[in-house]
Image (cartoon, rainbow, N blue to C red; front, side):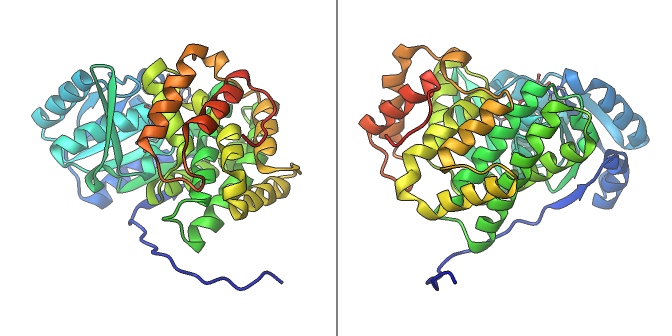
Amino acid sequence: MPAATNRAFVHDTPGIRVVFGPGRRREAAAEVERLGAHRVVVVAGSHERSVADELTAALGDLLAGTWTEVVMHVPAGVARRAAATARERGADLLIALGGGSAVGTAKAVAKELGAPILAIPTTYAGSEMTPIWGITENQRKVTGTDPRVRPITVIYDPELTVSLPAGLSANSGMNAIAHLVEGLYAPSGSPLSALTAQEGIRALAAALPRLVADPHDMAARSDALYGAWLGGWILGTTTMGVHHKICHTLGGMCDTPHADTHSAVLPYATAYNADAAPEAMRRIVRALEDAGRPASDAAIGLWQLAGDIGATTSLQSVGVPESALGEAARIVADAAPTNPRPVEFMGLRATLRAAYAGERPSAT
Ligand code: NAD
């Protein structure tokens, strides 16, 4: 029997309506009516064009406009123009349709206008569940938290993820697992977030190999999106640690793709924290085991998962120059993110070197 624990936590859950299931994107107009909105602006990138057309047709008179200029990391100019258009159209609701970039663009508009967001995500990034916004100006991404940008309704339709190519699915899935892993040792976690994080890792670790083998496997798509929802909830309700700080830093310095960077760093950030967060490591191993992936330790299990599904396993392969590793370690050490193991330069540099090479993770 496990030893009794002295529990102490704060649990504060935002109210987000989640509508989940294949085909449920077709309920978007009904959800808009439920919210009492009359002037909807749809924000959707070019990959989402056909679904956006289906959506705008269903909205009929409720549609006030569309915005299709979606760029990763939301350049400030795009954010300003999108907000001006939405204001001019008198938007009282924004629908964000797409990956984290489309959701991020809608958030930048919501931040200016105060109009709420209904999100329909098409990747596993998780932004739809968080109050975090990010805008890039002069090659610097500024992020902040504002409860007004957190979507009030999210429609998860796994059919929309079938078109995600295997590589994108694998990396985006590892991005979602990264939220869940860091939620397990977040000081702002609770017993509920620990259970949720473990279940999310299990769902994704079981689903990703299946959907990479067959991108049309709807049950696997559904399980992966379910895990991504849990990942988004964890990202939105707990504090992320050294892993997210490393990825954010490398993304800013080297303009690396978001999901690939997460995939390349996660096993090594996990190894960095292994000794300082034993309970989190036990839960990761248990989740992998329950997904049919027994692992000798958490970091190695995540590394094997990334390798097996063809996700990115080295920083070198996403274009990070070796010469950037020292500076990145310095920036992360100076930022001193909240993390189970104190964040220090030498350990970080060794971690980044291992992630650069993509070698089997071990304690650094
Ligand atoms: P993305 O939205 O840029 O999508 C990646 C590519 O996949 C794009 O070309 C997109 O058009 C395409 N795509 C999306 N869905 C598709 C589908 N179903 N089928 C085919 N192609 C599809 O990438 P992302 O990883 O989803 O999001 C990354 C961005 O989101 C970054 O800017 C990141 O900082 C941000 N983000 C923010 C938060 C937050 O809480 N604020 C959380 C996670 C990510």
